[in-house]
Image (tube, rainbow, N blue to C red; front, side):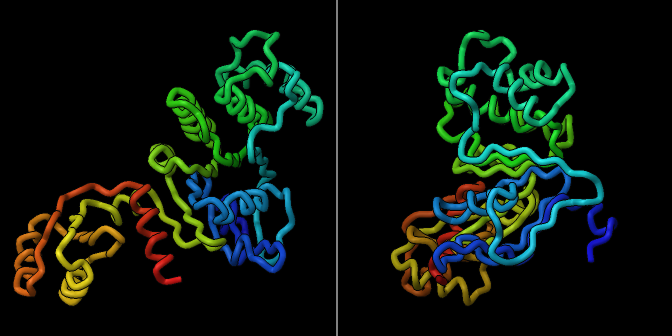
Length: 304
């Protein structure tokens, strides 16, 4: 049984969570932990199970098996924007928030003005209705609705999808402000991985319904670091030769990634030359979240 001490840092955890549709485990045995204060970047291909898992967290659908626990040491509140903001198209931003406040019995008369100011919609023409908003304005109003009750935990499903660069920056600033100034724990999914890398403090990668990796930003940087990318006259033979010498390497469809120092390139070239293999191209590079994800999924697919 969980104790208050167990939940000192943890906000939400799942254990062997499963959601099945027509004998297919869309979410398959997922055990995940989200800690207080995290901006948790949730990553996966279309159809990997991200949105289904998010809907389970938000209690919009029932699990098929496993366990989902939220912090019960205190009354925890949750907000969510899933598959687009749920707003009334013929109401203004203020009237959408007002209707929500009535539904949730929110008594604070200043809260609507606070939220409009926070998400950058305070200056919008009061006659302008949601259907005429830009995509960025719609997303900001969706977040506004989700934070009306000062949630401890906020779920954002693809909040920057389709936005222009300015809109992306605006959403990024809102996320940072919610997390740093109000201590809101946030789970955010996005296909724009290099943008996600600018906001997330932890990452979870889901593939074919399974959580294949959880890591912090520091762990990501440590695992990526600087690497050598090598193409040779025989990549398969090069891979096996280097593997025997205990190099930290991976192979993808284009060549070989060697996670060792620059100084070892001379030794690598010498080893290949002795075995009648020639380096046709190589360079040094700093890895990023997108490359890390693609390499991880490529390795998974090779072993599936």
